[in-house]
Image (tube, rainbow over all chains, first blue to last red; front, side, top):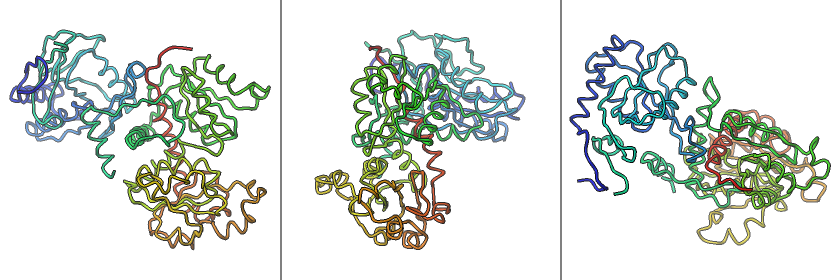
Length: 182
Length: 338
């Protein structure tokens, strides 16, 4: 068992796989195929998730959708309060003008990251539409943001932490809730 | 040492980023390898921003940057101003002409006035070595970036130099880098010395013996383990250039001639000019850099200055990226005081 205080698994590797498969189907359904769809993962963990969705879309539909990475450090609204964080690269695989961009993130919480991601995206081009896919929606929104595709809705307390662990970044697939403090 | 970049990358991926603790950037002498790599890493991201159609990010919205220049400068001042504007800061320029400096206001009073106007970052260029340290000591709130002080240091130029070289060579570890010219009076060379040796370059200093930075090397060059321990001094450029992968030519300040520190300009050019014949002795893919402005025909021949090996224009672009990176790193939380 993993170390750490009061850790509860809320999504296993199998459940994660099924959620991603469902989201991939929903993306295809909503966009009537994969035409003009671009998946943009938000760094850090949105990027491997975007690749997994693209892999499923390729399996289901036989189409390779472009996958990019969006770093939102320069667009955060709390740089002055929390200090600078190291910046990752932003990779834009195709011209985003006229595309249907699906933003992919691991956890939807206050909505501030998504606000920053939207601003970052608008500086890169003019997509026809932007949709949002998240693996976990944990509530507590501070901005009017809603996801189009949700792997799992998880009610949480404000002081809990939702951690998405992925094979690519953490060596295994699972989502856990950590209670801070005790 | 070779894997410092890889180590930083790992730390970043794991979210265990090295913390940036500095409020001021005065010189690179006390920069750790990790701090250098963090600045260079951040500058790489900034260069991506420069490549976009929309060259604007909101990171420094609501922050104010003042460039306070007591010496003439085009590229450094414009570079800081542009960097600030791309990051969405408000940038104010103050030069000695047309300001209260002309009326004899002291440096301290000018600094305090500027700080009282809620400036977050003060970019200072001053003819006196050490002026930015004085500023940092006396300012409780604003950050200070040294944009060149006397003959002491020019950290942002050195950062852009190593950034440019990393882009071309990958790691600088073990690379033979020759700095040629008036090193003793060059704040660029002095900061380059710290940055290049920290990143593992094999540094060769070349020029008239009267213009070598003996004060900086003394005691350090024979201390085992000191980054300067591997620094070579070679007054013969033909020898120094042998196998060089990088040549940094320095601007020769003509007033040094009057001080009896060097023979005539013609004599200087004959002995220490970087020209095509000498370049042929260097490594086949040698890169040539110059901090500008160039005296073509003195320290560098026009053919070399405008050759494919010269990275002078790239240095200017990279200066922008490096300065954006520093402004970003310095914009963290600040306790309100003063």
